[in-house]
Amino acid sequence: MDSGRFCLVLILSCLISGVVSQSILQILPENRISGDRKTLLRDDDIFCDSWRFSIETNDAGIWYNIPARCVKFVQNYMLGERYASDSDQVAEDSLTFANTIEITGDGKDAWIFDIDETLLSNLPYYEIHGFGSEVFDEKTFDEWVDLAEAPALPASLKLYNELQRLGFKLILLTGRAEFQRSATEKNLLLAGYGNWEKLILRGASDIGKTAEMYKSEKRKEEEEEGGYRIHGNSGDQWSDLLGFAMATRSFKLPNPMYYIP
Amino acid sequence: MDSGRFCLVLILSCLISGVVSQSILQILPENRISGDRKTLLRDDDIFCDSWRFSIETNDAGIWYNIPARCVKFVQNYMLGERYASDSDQVAEDSLTFANTIEITGDGKDAWIFDIDETLLSNLPYYEIHGFGSEVFDEKTFDEWVDLAEAPALPASLKLYNELQRLGFKLILLTGRAEFQRSATEKNLLLAGYGNWEKLILRGASDIGKTAEMYKSEKRKEEEEEGGYRIHGNSGDQWSDLLGFAMATRSFKLPNPMYYIP
Figure 1 (cartoon, chains in turn blue, red):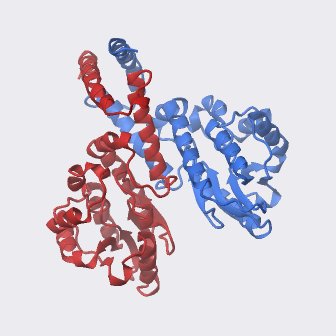
Figure 2: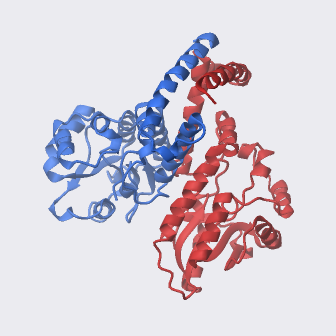
Figure 3: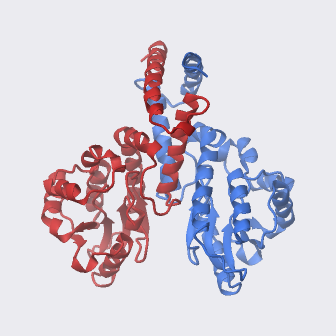
């Protein structure tokens, strides 16, 4: 595209965004509509970007909902290039680290992967459920899981295959429950994942535990009973990564849609 | 600004950015100049935003330099509204947590603050030293420290005062060396900080330790010998926050300029 055409597109998108911003402003509370409309929207963008910084660094701690003014921001982030780009960068960081590990050949060099929003993307579900802004509905989400149609997160699929090629044993550790095992296996295979070492789901005795406790306990078991050396751990939630029996390096994937303690 | 004027500004900035992008492109290596120039610059923005995600979440691990294509991005981030906004958000998260702590009144409820890029901003120094893109020069930085002219990070000054009002004892734990004590105290006072409980600098026995080790050891001392309960810890480096004797909650402030192990 040459400069002239680019400018034309800018002007058009400016006019379109004028219309969109007007309709967004109509649903804002009265007291927020003060001063300059453009400033208001730019402020939202900066506010939401800072909110994202705060949740992704875990500064926010527990959070329950996307701030109302950031739903559109999260939608744009998830559907635009930034989510894919951030995921690519995390995968690249992970692989850089993985390449520094000497694989011993005893089959005990392990890497842990979470599933939802890590190996598999539930974006098709969240797209029709407000990108996490709606109250989580277990029933419809379980129905979605049963469909086994979640696509792979492309960056993670590539990393998964690379790690296998390097000789890592891949342990999948998910908050999904045992009754979802077959749907989960089916979905993973359809999405292109294969040859995992283990797939660990929440059993009866894990119900009611926080994800951080459940996952820490399982990592500890794999280390102590399985004899695995957990070099890396990839997850979109801090509760996938923190606690005890932590991996040598933990990799936080982006997820501004929801928080699991 | 009305829509029409906003569009005019957009068109003008479009034309100006055309000129700027051309001069930036001239210093890019040949193989990067492929396809659409605008796409290239938008790609830089997305790339740099993902790079920032990766360093701020600690996914990147050790890093030495801002990627060459992100120097301008870091400059815009630091000098624009985003750095201030992100810092405000972290301070707000910190205060939300602080308000949940019951202060016992025995004077042992503590909060730790790092100094550089946490309480004090060295932005005036880094502005004339490439925003961290230049190799760190101890000599000129020490001269800058001696001037004692670093301004407060506004969000941190506000948080500092609020925490004191709540009854926290504030322990300042910095990578600066003992010989910089008086310049540091002078600077802190000039910037508006006062009544800290302790100011801990690197002593002779701390030289050569990583920041993470040095700071972990000092936190442990404060807990075991000082009897403090370290509720919160604020720092711009992961090495301010991780290791052992970690605070109940750690708060990562933004810093895309440099990394300290």
